[in-house]
Image 1 (cartoon, helix red, strand yellow):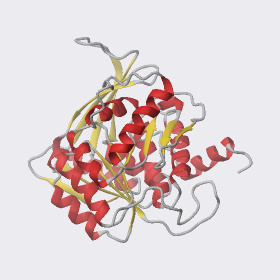
Image 2 (tube, rainbow, N blue to C red):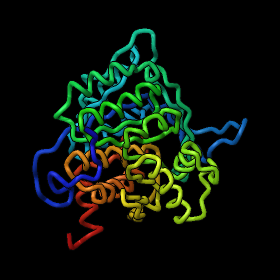
Image 3 (cartoon, one colour):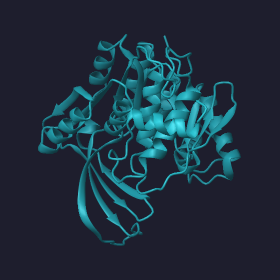
Length: 342
């Protein structure tokens, strides 16, 4: 049985004021420690720039998205791997404090915990280099075992691609086997994404990743630079990718919100509320975590995407991938402000 990411809601979503049972969010992805330098501008090729203090934050797309889902009110668990080192212990402790269930995180001897080196400029843009560490050693068997054990409890599986290809494909396939809706965040785009498309996950690329996906699925007219002539080109690329995946696609567009391409091929623009940008690190993770939380709660895809867009816009006003992630109450307030009539 294959999960359907656009199924009818089990209950109304954030902003409805109605309560009900919801499935868990299972996130399969990377766990990192982020080493962050804030500088006046990003370095060019071969260039050194200086900042002030070095800041350490919990990171990794999987871990960040799990935190975002938990803060948005979901029961969130993480399936991943850390090294048997101090950074790994600290990462798990941070996740536990944020309400993420970490019992399915493997602690691996002989591997370092993943790390990201991040430079953030005055405008909030960033450059990131990642050392995968234990993330690359997460096995398909570990992922499959965890998801099968949780069958019947999971409302949505969210998979990100900073882990090994075999683990990515195993996660998407296992989600289909247990009948759970599955989101695949192709960041970065890897050959595993093409292998996973046969399981029909909901894809959530940004514009650059969408261009790379277009090339991956055999669109000879696309380049991988992310350059597109406005929303029409983004919609055309999303249409081609959705046809290959046989599933909806949600393209995140930063301050321009998101573009949803539904199963019937209709593109729909979802506008983002204005935000004073301080740091965009983690905005995409916030989007995916909240999207998964709302799908697990039973929201239709359009509603879930709208809530996720609002949450991502809230996340950029504070520094740090997780420090800006909003709570359910903050998301609720922002939704009310955007739609005063409810």
